[in-house]
Amino acid sequence: MRTYDHIVIGHGLAGAAVAWCLRWKGRRVLVIDREGPGSASRVAAGLITPITGRRLAKTWRLDDLFPAAAAFYRRVETATGARFFASRDMVRLFADDRERTEFEGRDDPTLRAIINRSVPLVNISWFDASHGGFEMASAARLDVPRYLDASREQFTADGSYLTAEIDPPSDLDLAPGGVVIPRFEVRAEGVIFCQGLAARDDPWFPEVRFTPAKGEVLTIRVPGLGEDRVVHRGIWLAPLGGDVFRAGATYDRADLDPVPTRRGREEICTRLREFLRLPFEVIDHSAGVRPIVEGGKPILGIHPEYRQLTYLNGLGSKGALLAPFFATQLIDHTSAGRAIDPDVAFSPGRTLDPSTRVVERAHAAVRASLGTGEVAIDATAGNGRDTAFLAELVGPAGRVFAIDVQPLALARTAAILRERSYSNVTLVQRDHAELADLLPKEHHGRVGAVMFNPGLLPGGDRSIPTSPGTTAIRSALDLLRPGGVVTVVTYPGSSGDTADADAVRMLLESLPATHFEVRAVGPERPAAPRLFVIRKGNSL
Image (cartoon, rainbow, N blue to C red; front, top):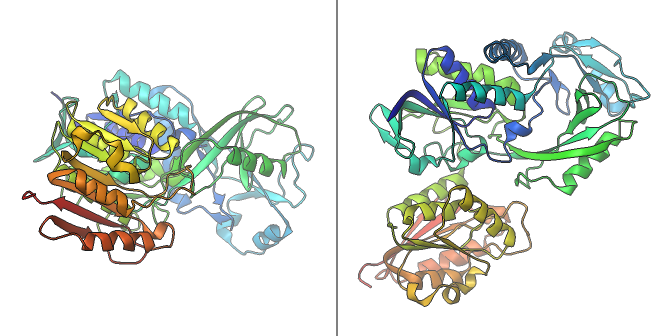
C-alpha cells in the first residue's frame, strides 16, 4: 500500500494550488481527479480584474490577493518551465452615461490608484467607446488550462497524480490518525477536499450551502481585431493570439447543467455586438458551473471531529485570484496552526444546506438497511447520483431499477453508470406512479430500498410534475421486504406550493404504526426540504 502525507481530491484551481503548497513544504501528495466535462476551472477565463461588478467596485482584498497570486504562479512557472500567467492592463468601457457619471462622481482614492487613464485607449473602428471608460492596472490573466496541464504533468511525473472517479463516502475509510482508500491501495495522514460543486454530496461537510451559477463562454474569430488587452463591457473579450478571442460569460442560477445552450450563445453574441464593431465567427462554445457558496466567499478549514479531513471550496468566478492566497493560508493552518481569516473559516454553524443535509441522511438510512445482492429502486433517477449510490451498495450480484419519465434524466444516469463501470442497473422510462406494474413480479415483496428524491432536473422539462406522488409511495411500500426502507425527500420551496408535501405527510401519518415506522428529518418550515424514512416492520 502506497503511503502519502496528504491526498488532494480535485485538480481545479483550488486543488492544484493546495497540492503545490504542500509540495513546497516537502509533503508527499497524491492528487486524485476525475477529469470530467463541465469543470468550472477548465472553462474559467482566469481573469484577475481589479474593478468588477455592476457597481464597478474594487475587488475584495485585492491588495493582499494579487501579490500572492502573482508570486505563486511565477513560482509554478519556474517549477514547470511553462508560461501561463501574464500581468496586463485591462480596459473597462462604460455601458451608458449613467454608469460613467456615477463612477466618475466617486471620491475613492483606492479606485484612483488602480486607474491608469481616464480615457480608454481603444481603436474606435474596433469598439464603441462612445460613453468613455478607463484602463486598469494591477490586472492579469491566467491561462487556466495550460496551468492545470503543466501542474498535472509535473505531478504525474513524480507519481503524485491519479485520474479516477472517487466517491468519498464509500471509498474513504477513516482510521485513527489517517485515511485509507482500499480501492487504490493508498494511505495518508489526511484528505483535502477541493471538489468544486461535486462537494454538494460530501457527507462530512454538509453544512456548506452552495448557490452555484452556470457560466457559458464562446471562442470566436475576429478578423482585423488587433487589441491585445482584455476589454470589459458587461461581458469580457479576452485575446488568445492572432485573431482568436474568448468572450463571456453568462451567469445562470436556474440551469445548472454544464452543457452549452443556444440561449447562452445568443446572449453573449448580443452583448458582444453592443460594443464590438467588427464581425466575428463562433468557433467553440463551452460551459461550466461555478462553485459559489452562500456569502460569496471561499470556505476553508479542518473538520471539527475528523481532524484528518480538510476543506477548500467556493472560489466562484474569481478562482484564479483567490486560490493561491487561501490555499497557502489553509496549509499554513494545518502545518503550523496559523489562523484562518474568520470570514472564510469553516465552522459547522456557519452555513447550512438543507437539501444536502436531507439527501445525505437519506443515504445513511438506506446504507443501514440495504445489503449486497439485493434489489433496490431509484424512483426518480434525475442526475443519477442516487442510482449510482444504490448500485454501489447492492454490488454486482444485486439489481437496481432506475425510473424516470424524462429521457434526459436517464441519459445522464447512464453516463454516470458508464463512468463508474456499473452494469447492475436497469433504466426504465416510465412514470413512477406505475411502479407496481413495471417491476418484474419476482421482485415484489423482496425490494430492500426505494428512494424518491424528485426536485427539478436542471435543463429538464419543468412542466413535468416532480412530486413523488402518494400512489407511487404506496406501491413502493408494497414492494418492500420486511425491514426494507423507503426514503422520500420533499422540496416545497422549489415551487412555493406545499400541497404535494402535505399529501405525502398525510399519507405517511395514516400508515399503521404496527406495520411501518415513519421518521421525519428536517425543519418544519413551509419552504424547507424534508426527508421521510419509512421502514417496513419485520413482523409482516
